[in-house]
Image (cartoon, rainbow, N blue to C red; front, top):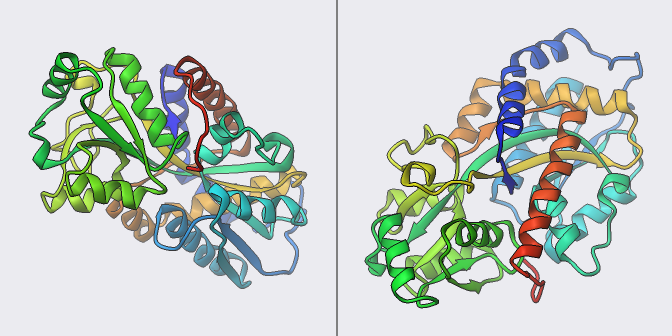
Length: 339
C-alpha cells in the first residue's frame, strides 16, 4: 500500500513507467548484467507469501513464466502464507543471495509492518534487496447497496450527523486498507468505527451482505462485486480515474485531498544480493511485464505495470515508510490482531 502523495512521488511513477520500453529493450540486448557477472546455472524460486489466487500470486506466476523463457531454467512459484506474510519473507531472508530465490510481496509487509508489529522479525533494508516495483493498483471506497450511501458527500453528511454510527471494514488492524481508512478520517474530519477482519475476502463478503456499510478495498478484489452491482463504488484513491473503471470518480474530484493511495507490489531478493544481479533481474522483470499479453492480464485485474530500478524502488520504500509512520502515530494505531 503506498501513499503516492506529492509531486516527487508522481514523477517517480511516471518516470519508471515511461522507462519500461527502454528497460525491456536493454534485457533483450544484454544477456548478461552490467559487469558481465552471470546468474548461476540454476532454477528460480519465487516466494509468494500469501495464498494462490490474489495479486501477489498472479504477479509471481507471470514472472516465473518469463524467467523460464528468458533464462531457459525452471522457475517455480512457492506459496507460503502465514504470519501476515512473515513465513515466506523469512525463507527469502535466509536464502543464498544469488538471484535465484526471489520475493513477490505487497507494500504493507515492507512499509507498514515494521512500524506496527511490536516484534517484527526483519530489518527490511538489511535483510532484503529491493529489485523493482512490479505493479500498482488503486484502492476504492465501496459501500453496501443496503446502506443507502450513494456518494462521498452523503457519507460525510451522515457521519457528521451521527459520529461513530457508521463503520468500515478492513482486512485487519494495521493492514494497508485500515490505514487508508484512517487517512480518510483524518482528511475529512469525520469518525468511523473500524471493524477488523482476518483477511480481505471475509471483510468484502460482510460489506456485500450489508453487515458493515463501508470498506476501502484494493480495486482488483472489489471490481467483480462492483460490476455485478453487489457493491457501490464511491471513489478511487488515486490522482486520476482508472482506465479499467473510468466511471468511478476519484476522491479528489469530490473534494477529498490527501488520500491518493495505491496498493503496490514489488520484487526483492535476500540481503546482500550483488547490485549487478539486482539490476539484471530488474531488466528481466521490465521485459516480462512489458509483454502486451501480460499487461492485459494485469489490467483485467485492475493493476498497472509500474517498474523501476533497484535504487528508485529502495527510495520509494523509505519514503512510504515515513508516511505511514506518521499516520500510525497520529491515529494512535496499535496492533491487536494480525492483518
